Image (tube, rainbow, N blue to C red; front, top):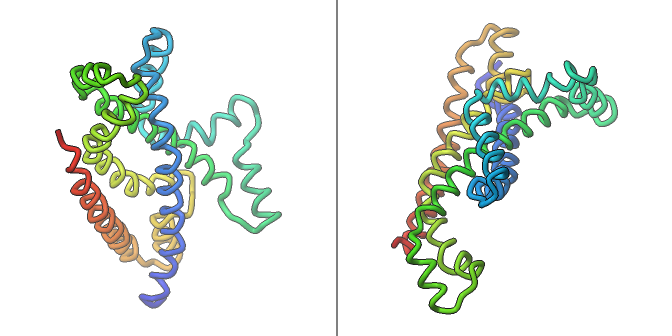
Amino acid sequence: MSFLEVTKFLLDGFWISLLIFAVTLLCGAPLGLPIAFCSMSRFKAVKAISKVVVWIVRGVPLMLQIFIIYYVPGLLFGNQIFGKLDRFMYLEYGIRDAGRVTAVLIAFTLNYACYFSEIYRGGIESISRGQYEAGYVLGLTKSQIFRRIVLKQVIQRIVPPMSNEIITLIKDTALANCIIVSEIIKQAKELAATKAMVWPLFYTGVFYLIFVGILTILLGRLEKKLSYFRS
């Protein structure tokens, strides 16, 4: 295979990596906010359950979580739902790995939602009580204080740790190959097995470096723009 053919073959896998990245970010980031509110809830039961869930998800390796999501339904209920989805989507629409990708997306979304929730919680709790009290003096409601005063400062404070998690996310997409999802690392391993070509495995690093570089520039500009809200 020529260099261009290898590049195209790896790009086919990198689109899957980007899909996992995008869906996890779009679903996990919003989901983290209600989890954060539950972790700060005045109701002890809600707070305790939320903290235990976050502790388990953050404590168990993401690869193991992917295995649990994909295999446990079949082991417990005798119904390998993701395997059936794989076969259905391939036979009906010619789409490969639909069930496996779905399992990966669920695992990634839940995992990163819990990580994001801790970042949100830390950002919200970092705002001093004096700012809330000043809002009450001005006659603002609690929701107005949060939207107009607190939220902007929280966003500015969580951008650096969120940036780190987002960059980690694109690299973590490589874990999808543990259940044979055809992301870029899986594609490179396939070339090594079938064509005895090892160098494409190292070449995949270029794809990650370029994408991480773009993310670093965009997130750096966002952080600089939000520096206006620095207190």
